[in-house]
Length: 214
Image 1 (cartoon, rainbow, N blue to C red):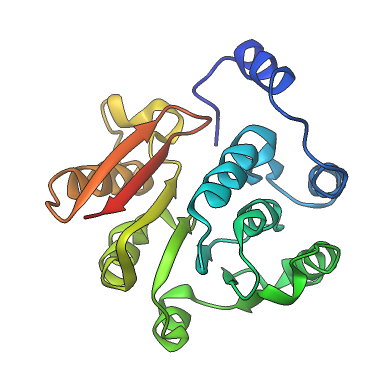
Image 2: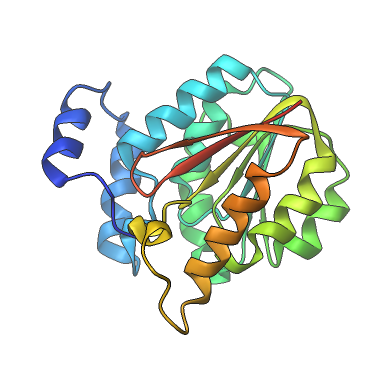
C-alpha cells in the first residue's frame, strides 16, 4: 500500500493532528521493527480519524475485519461505551501474540475479543447487529464481505472500507493479472450503485470509503 498523498503533505498533517498516545506509539514502532509490510498499519492519521468517528458514533457493537497488529483496533475501541463490544478478526495466527499483548494494555481490553481465522466463516457465528464496521482484509473478497455484512449493519450504521483507491490504480488502465485492482474497482462500482446506502470516498492515505446504511 502506497499513500496517494505526498509524504510532505502527510507529514504536515501528522504535525497538525493530536499525537498518537503512548500505547499506539509503541505499537507503531514495534510493528515497523517486527512485522513484514508495516505500511499496512493504519498509522497516526487514519487512527485519529477512526478514533474520532468511533467517539462520535458511540457504537454498542464494532466489527473489525483485518486486525493486523491491532493499531486500528485500539483506535476504534476509543468510542465504545461501557458495555459495548469490539470483535476483531485476523487470519494470520502468527500475529496473535502481538495483538493480544497490546490489546491487553488497553483500558478497553475487557470489551475487545480477537478471533483468529477466516472472517467469512467467523462472522455468521457472531450473530450481532453492528453499529460500526471497519473492513481492511482480502481485497478480492470485498464484495462478499459487503453482501454478508450490510444486512447485519443497523440502519444509520457506518461501514468503513480501507484501500479503495489502491495506490491510485483505480484510475489507471488495469494491467493483466491484477485481480486486486480489478476487485477494488468492482467493489467501488457495486457500492456506488447500491440504493440502500450513502457513500463517500476520502483520499486519506490509500483511500477510505465511508458507507452509511439508509
